[in-house]
Length: 419
Image 1 (tube, rainbow, N blue to C red):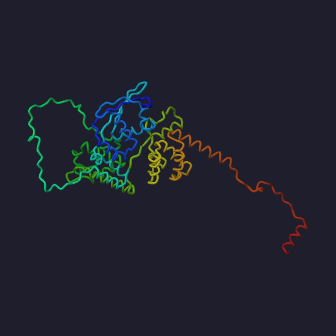
Image 2 (cartoon, rainbow, N blue to C red; image 1 turned 45 degrees about the vertical axis):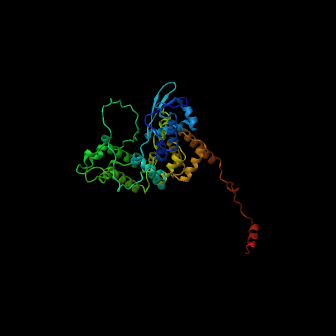
Image 3 (tube, one colour; image 1 turned 30 degrees about the horizontal axis):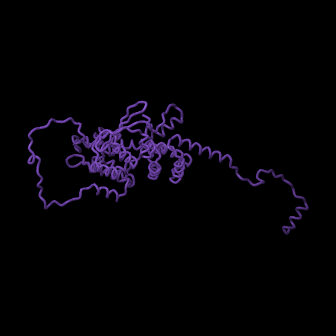
C-alpha cells in the first residue's frame, strides 16, 4: 500500500453529472450508513470542481486536512468508505511526491438505494423507525387518483419528423454514473443452485441481477449456502422464478428471528491497510500485531470464545468501541484481549468502557500504542502487589516463651475466681 503524505497531490475528476439533488440523497440516505465525515469529504472534493468542470485544479492533501479540520488518517478512513460504497474511485501515480486522482460517481437513486438490501437494511438499523418512514416519504411520489382523467400525451412520431440522421458520437458524453457495492463472494453459487432441484427453479431465470442480490443478502445477513438454499426455495413463485422482494423479506425475517429481533448493521470491519504495521520478523510480538490488524473484532472475539459467536451484549460492546469511541478495529482487539485477561474472561461493559475512556484521553490510535499502555498498566499492578504489605498484629511474628506460674500466683488467681 502507498503511504499517503500531506505533500501528496490530488485532482478531482467528475465521472458523472452532479446536481443539487445529490446533496439530499447523500445526507438523508448515505450519511446514516457511512457517517458525516465521509459525506463531508465527498462534498469537499465536489467543491474542488467548478460548476460543470470535469477535471479540477491540483491540490495537496495538506490543503485538504486544513480545509476539513481533520487528521490525515481520518481522511483516509473516510475515503475508503466512499470507495467501498461506490461513490469514489482512486488512482495513484508514484513518484517523489505521489499524485492521486479522485474520480467522483453519483450516489444511487433513492429507488436503487432502498432496493439494495445492504444499504436499506443498514439505514433502517441506524435511524429510528419514525425517521426511516419520514425519509421514505420524502423521496416518495404522492399518489394522485387518475380515474377521472384521460391521458392525451403526444407521441414522438406524431410530433417530430426525422429528415436526416446525424453521425453517431463516441460513447464519451457524460452521463449519470454510479457504482455498485462490491462484496466478498463468500458463497459458491454453483454449489448453492446445485442443491435446488430443477423442477423447483428455472435455472435460466438466474440473471446477473439475481446473483448480485444473493451475494449482498449473504453478506449483510451472514448466510451460508445451506441457509440460502432453503430461503430461495421459499421465495420461488408459480413460474419457478425467484421473487426478489420475497427473498429479501425471507432473509430479513430469518435473521431477526435468529438474532432475537435485532437487525444487522455495518461497522468498519478491520484495520485498513494504510494503518497496518509491516511485519518484518517471526517474533511473537509481530505475529500478535498481525493478528490484531487482520481480524475484525467480531472474528477476534469469536476466536477468543473458542468458536462461539459473540452474544448480543458482547456485540453491543464492540459497536460502542468502534462507533462511539471511533477506535480502529485493531485497537478494539487489543482492548478486548486485555480485558479478558485481567477480568477473568468476562467482558463487562462498564469495565470495558472505563478503560476505553482512559485510552481515549490518552489519544490511543494504533495497535502498538494500545499494547504499550496495557504493558505499562500491567507493570503498575505488579509493582503495587509487591509493595503492599499485609498488616499483622504486633505479636504475630514474635516467639512466646512458655513460663510456669508460681504457687502464690495460682493461689491469687483462685481467690479472684471465688474458689
